[in-house]
Length: 495
Ligand code: CO
Figure 1 (tube, rainbow, N blue to C red):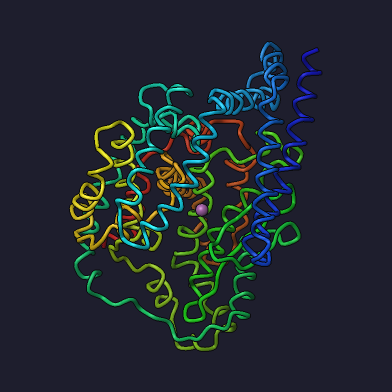
Figure 2 (tube, rainbow, N blue to C red):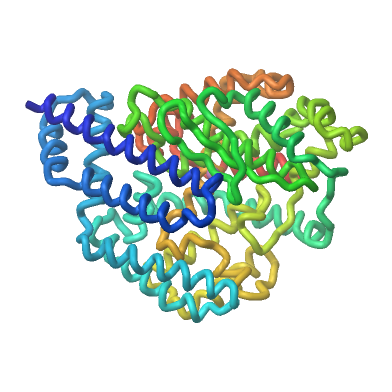
């Protein structure tokens, strides 16, 4: 009987997986090749798919099958036990909200998003203010419906980073913050006045494509199961087993822009390509969280790609593709891609200042959600905190609290996963280095095989087997800590 329920669940989830894969491919097409006038039809198609999978997943019989499976004696952490545990988590999140609340949230986010576009364009926070207040109110209602350990923020966080807790993140981030503030105080004043270094271009796009492909292939991205195309915003999307799509964008004045997008998205892609293919459509075959996913992208982008070892190996190859680099040294490239400058905009931030942008948002969105800060007072709170942390005056809200799209989507609790990604990346590579003292020598030879095997073994193969804190413990001996990343930044930028 129970085995039967499990088989029925598997069938249902694979069906959902097929539809999600088709929808994913349509979304990818929308960002890459779709003719502009097709947008309305495409939006309708995608909305249909979304509604269809939601109904398939939240159907009463699914709840019944999960319940039956829960009374079965699957051995702990077996594939079946993990899938049932995660189906329960997702089913409860999807069904604990009333359809009215879900609909109101959907409606409110589309309106908030267009208000945000207008507010940002006109530098007028007042236009966005009532929408932000509404989304916060609905998010509080959703948190109450889902339930939480200590704080409403926990319930929202759990949607992006299962098992993460606000108070634990506060502790971990507090370990990180003083070191960054010190580094900024030290590097900041000179960096703020220095102009950004440039490389001798131009860098033809065709040559950039070939160079990026050579790097991606070498670090292990499987081009028989994936491809790289052009899009306005770089992303990685897993369509299904053996089909992973990456995108990047090109600037012919600086080839490193597209290169680091490719390295970042490749890190995501390697994770997708390393998930157990036979478990497609089930939790065991999918990535566990945003904070773990981002650790893979940051590890390849920053710890591998922005290292001296990387440029010692790749400079001669780059010079073949870009003859204008003939007189540049590996050290020139290293310095060019590691410039630190406190700036107003998060998405343009360097490795040192990035997490401070996140910590600011993490602190403010908790206060907003928990009614310790009114929406009215947000711009002022943003600007004074920003001045204290970065030493910069925020000239307008467009470059202040209106800069990110996330809050207009009602995504509260999403930002901390970026910093979790950085922390996990530093902790993971430190652990790999402890186990393999030759790692730096290998990377200097352009040999990435043992690093990728370690990540496959520690992270990729497990899918959802462990919640992120346990996964990090299994992989490195500790749940996510702040000090590894703080130490990495200090070593790299402190002297
Ligand atoms: Co990413």
